[in-house]
Image 1 (cartoon, chains in turn yellow, cyan):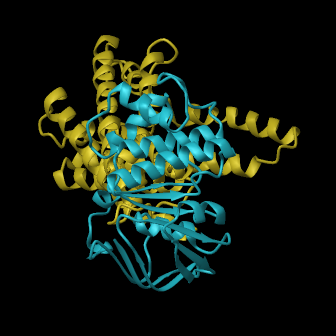
Image 2 (image 1 turned 180 degrees about the vertical axis):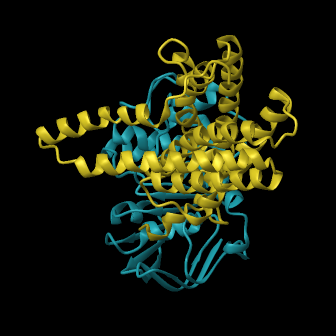
Length: 264
Length: 213
């Protein structure tokens, strides 16, 4: 923490001027979103203050059980977030696939990153574990949300083509091969596009934070490159598991499309 | 070949007893909404019946491997499914799905020409007319050498002249190789000419079974 300028409560308060400007402009134009904006800003403030104190506590404890509990809580909220983000109903069996993909995909990547790439000791050091797990889980969550929505949409819109393939003796896997491929691509593309703009269009949050904290940009980029590659890895694994297992839930044991039962 | 007993499917089908003979040409006729298409989908096990029993070659349909069955008992729907790609892709895909060896180009051409479809194998299929798509889908299935051919209104999008070409080819395939054909048609005339056994459905039940002399 060398050379960091502390903001302090009064100067931090002065930053709320931006919120006031926003509220005034919204009010004058009669947009009528003042309450929503106020509540959002309030939530952001309260949530961050709370998480700040929680993190201080967790960092002091350095206990493996606490770190793993935090991981569990993050996974729980990420999965719930996926359910909320996807605007169509999700079958129960697909929900299970989502949980499995998230836990397996992000779990493998988080441990690989901490143990092999950064090589921290102990591996559950919360100062590293928690922010890194957060970034990996958050990005995988976005990938899976896109994947789930795409998969459900395609299974519905391409129903005739799937059935046409089944009639010819195709396995469900062959009948949905194109859909699985499209879903996979659609879900990983945002993560890939992020890599392109990185360092030119924007400085990533983690890197900005480390630089502000006084770390050499050269060390900061090492972390950033490693974390970006891990995010790609995690998104790839989670979405791969999702698509590989996800299509199966749309078929019954006679390899019939499940929604097909109301067909004429 | 197929034997149905007390088969019920929603309020669409309600069949007490029905037997479909192997090696014969069976036509299923009836008003629209009489359950003809549903019956074909049951034979292909694309949908499930709630009650009763269907046997295929003496075995309970529900206990058979549905995928293996569909590679033997193949359904060509009234609105054919055309996959993205060329004529060749669309012909080979049936063999690919059923894990059979791909066919040589000459064989593909022979099959589409036999149905009066004179296209290049590299032609894209998205501009095909309904009748062309129907014949392409038929050619795809004939290449798969099915034991039982299930056809749903196979001539509905064809003009009179093409109907004769297509039906000649289908009947030739069935008779020369002793296969079974189950064909849904609204055309009583076609049923009289082609069918050896004609089953009339009415509101989901068998109204009559007629053997054509």
